[in-house]
Image (cartoon, rainbow, N blue to C red):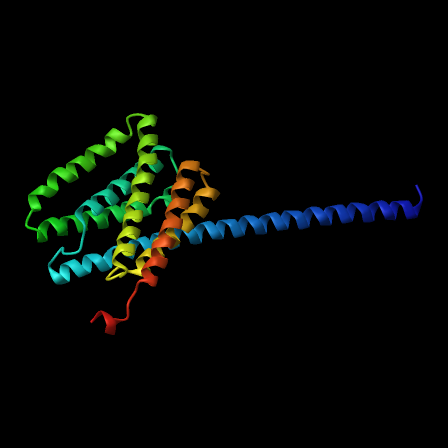
Length: 234
């Protein structure tokens, strides 16, 4: 083999090695970006959810009244969170992809106790809490039970948001409805679409979050549309 052929062969091997290194580096960068995105979505969602109900809890304690808080809506929301938590736990999803549900459940339980306390019906809280506790075990008895419950949970959550939209359309006044709260809810839904797609890819969970995202954005826009200046409201 001539010297020229040897040098050409060496250059070819060098170029191949360089391409492999560049490809490996690009793959590592992509994996790092995916990990960073997943970390941000998970922790930003948890941070938002940790403070999502606190203003309402503070308002009830400050006013020492549960006026304006719907008991049925609160119970449905609590049931939805419980089903979602049980579903994710049942299928062994990564903890960070559903850790907000225990946080939201605790806040909703506090709200529920406040409602019963300020309505003078504290004893009535016990049966509801007992039913929720028993539901945790019942939902895990069979895969079919938890799957059906999850599908129904999505429908119930969607119906509750449609009811809110109907109320706004009828009143044409957003009143004390918080666009910030609804906007943050939309963000958490969007973030959970990303985390679910990147981890489990569960179609049922993805469908739920897509529906919730669309409805949360719709409600946010409707609240902003019907918001009236303070001077006019007064």
